[in-house]
Length: 161
Image (tube, rainbow, N blue to C red; front, side, top):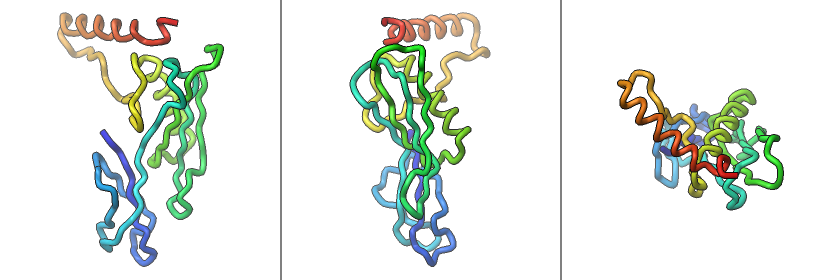
């Protein structure tokens, strides 16, 4: 799932610099729905700094300023319990506006990265919204899901270190 924000850059338009949420939008350019002129697109994305399997830190750029084309703030979450040099994950989140939202997202991303068995592909954000277990499932399905989840966690780089 690819999430983006499109901004109209026509100064005469009533929607000038107002973000429009775009889901799975794969076009290279954005067209304003009001004035039909071109605009700027900011995609949610992320990348690993190196190829080490264990992530110690997540840096999330947020509070995008479309007038100046810059992110005003960076939230950093770090796992101080890990010693040595590990990987750092960099994220860009144009929809995140507050430090509270950014820190919560960064914490969730770090937790998800700790459970992943392989590095995320380029520009892929880990899906921290994924639901692995459902209490509403019948006991046999819940038990099977629990075993599968346990096996995936046992393959995590954190459990092997």
